[in-house]
Length: 292
Image (cartoon, rainbow, N blue to C red; front, side):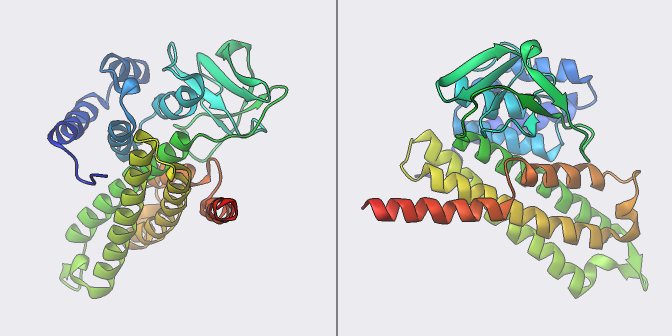
């Protein structure tokens, strides 16, 4: 496996960054149509991870994450509009279920795709006002979380954490105490370094997961579980240190920090936190070892 982006992937990353920078002020509907017109929903797993990381960096409000990583893996195609999937066996906390045009239901008899308006979805209030989550009522649901869904949440969290670190670094370079920028203090440097290390670890595992999915590698399940667990651990470090570096300013609604903290935290909690996936990883490795 090649862990370096090739020229096309680097160009894609720059194009995505340029697009989201120029279009982030657009209404959500136009933003969503822009992503669709650019064909981002049809990108392979590694390229999709690149797109999702950059959308996580700006806390994208569109249904892209659910359409690309919750609906598409079940239906085997992009949705006709927006979409999501119900695959945890319970229908609890389903991303974008209250506004999806199509919903893919994983049942004991297979995948059933139904129009969104026909699904009984009850919106759930969350701490992230730009995130749509709902409970879905449906019969005969089965559990089978796609690897792509775990990878998507992980790499989106990485993008949000990158933004938190960038905001914190910019702040400590400007904020002065005792006549010098607080970024010159050793303790502040250590916290920023810890955030950077956590992000790089989570990012490496997220892209490793994308690579295993792209290659249909037999390690893809373990890789997805590791990516989701590492992203959850990363956001805890970044959340804690990000608030501490901003001080009281970080607790105000006027500060953009809270937008990205909420997105990173939501990506950790959806489909289960880090401890859930660490336990699932142990069970998966034990199962495979017993089968040898």
